[in-house]
Structures are given as structure tokens and as C-alpha cells.
Amino acid sequence: MLTNLQARDVETLIHPYTNLVAVRETGPLILERGKGVWVTDVDGKPYLEGMAGLWCTALGYGNEELVEAAAEQMRKLPFTHIFGGKSHDPAIELAEKLKEMAPVPISKVFFTCSGSEANDTQMKLVWYMNNALGRPKKKKIISRMRAYHGVTIASASLTGLAGNHNDFDLPIAGVRHTTCPHHYRLAEAGESEEDFATRLAADLEALILAEGPETVAAFIAEPVMGAGGVIVPPKTYYPKIQAVLEKYDVFFIADEVICGFGRLGTTFGSEAMEMKPDSISIAKALSSAYQPIGAVMIPEIMYEALLTESAKLGSFGHGYTYSGHPVAAAVAVKTLEIYERESIFERVRAKIPQFAARRAALEDHPLVGEARGAGLVAGIELVADKKTKHQFDPKLGVAAKTVAFCQQEGLILRNVFGDAVTICPPLVISPAEIDELFDRLTRALDRTLDWAVREKLL
Ligand code: PMP
View 1 (spheres, protein in one colour):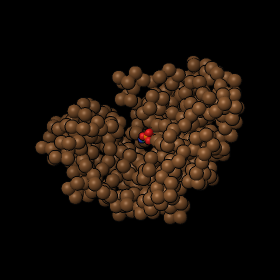
View 2 (spheres, helix red, strand yellow; view 1 turned 45 degrees about the vertical axis):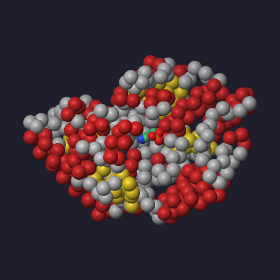
View 3 (cartoon, rainbow, N blue to C red; view 1 turned 90 degrees about the vertical axis):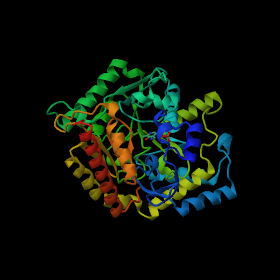
View 4 (tube, rainbow, N blue to C red; view 1 turned 180 degrees about the vertical axis):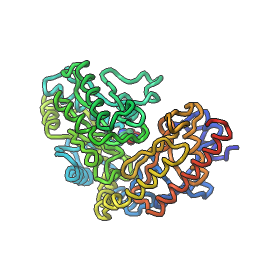
């Protein structure tokens, strides 16, 4: 029986990434307020927000400094744009700060409102650059199966998940997907992580050669895949992949939308994963999600190409009304200031051993095939048979069941791909709350096991 608010919801809203049939029956969980890592629903029930919303509220809820930064900027100048030679202080300050923090030499910053727009922009900039460099055929972009790069027409094409392509007539032309670096599922019998990484680099090289290196412009990768189920590549994967990219002059784009700003214990995920990208996409934790903002950070060689091409065309013809929105930029500046002042990333590093130990211990559970992760992000893959890694019938929605039990236990997690439950708490989670999160998840897994036994699924 739906509450009045739930009934009004299903009569009016289309929920993103939702089973639109099921939600009409169950109604949505309607949240009202938050403090720290906790959110409360309209009935006053508290939940530990184990996904930081959508991998984004890094500083948790109720941060008054961020509220004040937004209010102050709104009072001063709620909007002005940066088109046609205009600018404002928050955008300038934010771009300067990002250049300082970047893990590789960055020349300029372009602001967007989301991660999807950042990756869309990346694709356009690569095309634009290669036209300026006089190589108009070099335009294809290689992504990976199970990658997540967004949902606009271009970024959904880069995304390597069938659910983002089916019935949307995607991917668009010129996008290819290479092998996902998931050792647990994709390694051959007895294949070491090192050998697996070598094979994946060979797969990439074979794809580039088959397409023709003169047609391949860029490769895009998340340091650790998020929405694809939290896939952590083998240690030597990126150095081997990068050697191939360098050999064929393929531009390397890091999608740091989840891993950027401390998630893996380093400022950028690229540092933790030994990546040396040419350009970087960011969003989410850039403002701790208190305002929608993303960005693309580009190298000098790309900036020079933009200069050349826009001189020819009269103007650089790209930009969003809200590129560098002053309120979003002011909140992002404050967010970065808090990360630094409160040593948030250092404190993440101190919490990683406890988080990793609790994560790894889940592999003792009869339903858990792999409890993988890095930093403060994890993917818990449920299996019907641990020895054979046999999966449940996807129609059973076993991980979705676990997530529903978590919700009953007062814990918000997500099931994004297959039977993986993902965990990505606010970076400010305390050691006691980390224990609370894993205790509640363990209870939900036990309840899933009881259910699976009752339903004779094992
Ligand atoms: N890239 C990655 C790695 C992401 O995780 C996401 C969002 N989950 C995006 C891009 C898209 O960002 P947005 O939803 O802000 O468009």
C-alpha cells in the first residue's frame, strides 16, 4: 500500500535507472534529511548511506561550510556565465586549484555540469584536436566492456553496459569496447593476474591494429570501474595498456568521476593505479555533490590545438550555459579547501586497512564469490556456487534482494551490475560506522541466504 507521497510520486515521476513497473508497486524510498553519513526518510527512520548517494557525497551530509559557501555566492552573484570572454572569481580560483592538484601536467580546465558532459566534451575535444593536427581520420574512441562513462548519446556509447545501449540504438559509430580487466570472471584457468594483464594489453593492440592505428584517437578508462561492479584491474594492467597507447599515438583519457578526490586514498585514482593520462574527467566529489559540477582537465598539446582550430573557425564552439556556474564553482572551491584543511585523503588512507579487512572477511560468507575493492569502494559479487563461480539466474535479482534487506536493516547500498552489491560510503565515515556498515550488510547477506534456501535456489 503506497503512502500518499509515494502515490503522487509514481503518478508524476520517471525515475532514472529504476524498474518502472516494480516501483509502481513498492513506491520509492523518500528521504528527507541527512547528517554525517546518515540520512533519514520521511517516517524518521535513519539509514547509513553506504553509497554516498551515487558515489558522490564525499563529505557526507549537513556540511554547513558548503551550505554557507553556496548561500554567500548566491547573495553576491547567483549567476554569470563565462562565454565570450566573461569570467568570475570562483571559476578562476577553482581552475587554478585543479591545475595545482592534477596528477599530470594540465594546461587548462573546461567546466561542465556532470560526468556525462565531461566525457562528451572529452570526445569532442579529441575530434577537434585531431582535425587541428591535420589527421581527420584519427577519430575512433576505445572504451571497455562494463565501463561506465555516462548517459548522453556519446558518453552512453562509451559506457560498456548493454542496459545503456539496448533500445537506445547505441553505441554510435566510431566507439569500440575492449576486454574488461576482471580477473575473477575473465581469467583463463591458472592464468596469473600478470599474464591476464599482458593478454588484455595484447587484446587492445589487436583491436587497434584491426581498426587501423591511423583511425584510433583515444582510449578512456576509469582507474577502478564503478558502476560496472567495482572492477579493480591487476597491478600491472595500466603500465602495459599505456605502452600500447604510446606505440600507436592514442590519447589516454582518465575518467576520474568516481575515483577523483580521495576515493582510493590518493588525490586522484590515476596515482593509485599507476596511470599517466593525457586528460582527465572529474565530477561528483569535486563539490561533494552539494552542487552539480564536472570538468575536463586538458594538456597543453590539446589546448594549442583548440587555439589553432578556433582561430580558423572564429570561435571555440562548445559550452554549457552552466559551465563554471558561480555557485557550483564556489561550493567546489570550498570542498577542495576542506579536503586539504581536514587532511581528508590522509584520513581515508588510515581507514583503508579496516575497510579492506571487513570487505575481505565477507568472502567467508556462503553467498559471496568475490569481495573486491580498493580504497573506500567495494563490490561484493554474489554467486550460487563459490567453487564453480556459477551465477544465479539474473531474473531472480538476488543482489537486488540483498540491497532490499540492507534497506530494512537501515543501510543504503546499490546493485548496479549483475549480482554485485556496491559500497562507496562518504569519505568522512568513522571507524565505528565502517563496522556498522559491514555488520548490517552481513545481516542482510544472512537474510538473503535464508531466503535462497527457502526458495531452493542453492
Ligand atoms: N563516469 C563515471 C566513472 C561515473 O561513475 C559516472 C556516474 N556514475 C559518470 C561518468 C556520469 O556522471 P553523471 O551521472 O554526473 O553524468
